Length: 182
Image 1 (cartoon, one colour):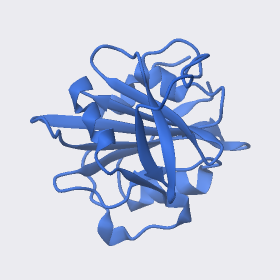
Image 2 (cartoon, rainbow, N blue to C red):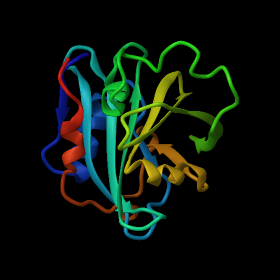
Image 3 (cartoon, one colour):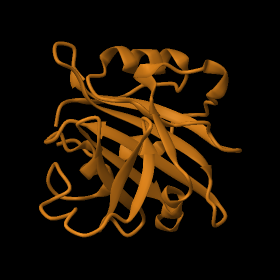
Image 4 (cartoon, helix red, strand yellow):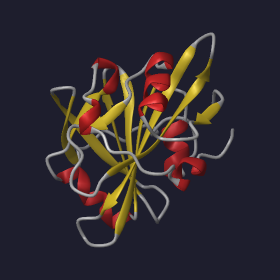
């Protein structure tokens, strides 16, 4: 896996830094729901090749009560950051993950996108699909909060622009440190 870096403070400066480095999408739900905050950004890559994976962290209320954390990862195939957050072996979701019908469909960059639920660590729910030619991972804690992907979730690529007034930032999520080094 390329070097993974978490930006020290969520905010517009961190967002702009990742957008400049990104060779893959930087996903964000369109219109954060009440109580939801962006709790960090990260990227994997180097200065020469750019960021081959991006991460957006979100923190907010779970629909089932309590708090929830969501990590959205966009990455080139073979990078492995999404699988690491989900606690899966190998860099990609594995052979045959998409042989059955999808478990959820979300809107991604204006297109319906299929997501499959993967057997992940017992404390999280992990969904994966493809969007804009890259893996799209949604890793959600606690696992029961995975129902979030069944609500009309719509993701936008922040590289295509954003309205600063629509973004709310909190402190950096400790979940961003849960991607172990290769």
